[in-house]
Image 1 (spheres, each protein chain N blue to C red):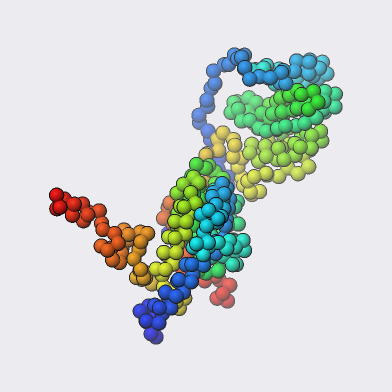
Image 2: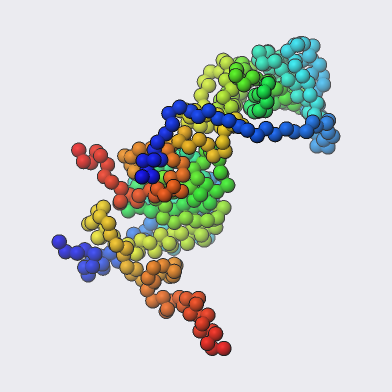
Length: 230
Length: 202
């Protein structure tokens, strides 16, 4: 019977694989006619290099935008320096990137804005796949709270020192991180149950119950609930 | 016991009850996304669903008997929708409004239910992204047609037993290609017969 079969469920989470790896061609320093002076901040980059030295792993200038890659354990100090000494008082965005490479698979980016100076800068942190842990910047920017929760939900990157690191969008008992590359587009069947087909019935673990021939019964044809019989 | 399906009293009572039910449907607006905007237009003065007696949107499921699921439905929201549906009293009907509620639409991804008929008994599906308010009106008229062609008294009496389909009490104007449309030749000449008729005249 379709109902019984659809309610079977694997108890342990599946080991996911992703076989396709896209390789982008190397890009040059292309001219960006829309780039504005707000994203070109060489003086801030020099100040960062002078202050932190080796903690600044790389500085990229692409399309007129400065991106500074920082060592993961110094990100809180860098953010505090930028906020207090350089006036970057607004965290515009924070999120994760799955680069799907062998080394430094995950990236966390921080888009900072100095409202008074009208400048923007982007920080990046690279993390290894087997240890995706980065210190939380909520002690510097309180706005990072929900962004870090979202990043944890979607990529499984853990933020040390976060006050309330729970899932943002997915249910709390969900076992996967959907924006990782190996996660299939339509999800894992059975990982997100649908509601019961009758008021007292079991959850529906088949996400395509209707396509597999199971039709939800109208309420006047539903079997009586068990509480009515006793 | 007397056969309730064919008695004069019950069939006439059915007509009265179905007339009352079909012309006083109280929708439960389950507005989830942009389709809800079109659903507001459907309830507003220009398209004026009050002509069909359904202008009273009930935000309490206890007072509603028609759920219009308008918009895409996530797996998390599905449990809330099913709970609201279970709280609605019988008899009740359900409209899946728009491509997303009907099939998942363009949201072909892990978080969106690929059609609310995976957990709700849907009576009428409306295509469109979003559908025009006329399409929602048409769906409402289809629901009314469905109500007028059911046994209401006999259904209440014979609860849970399998029943044959009710005979249509009036010509099926909206869906002439049904099983046994009454007065089909009067209201809807079929395409084939009209074609042959035209050939014969030539």
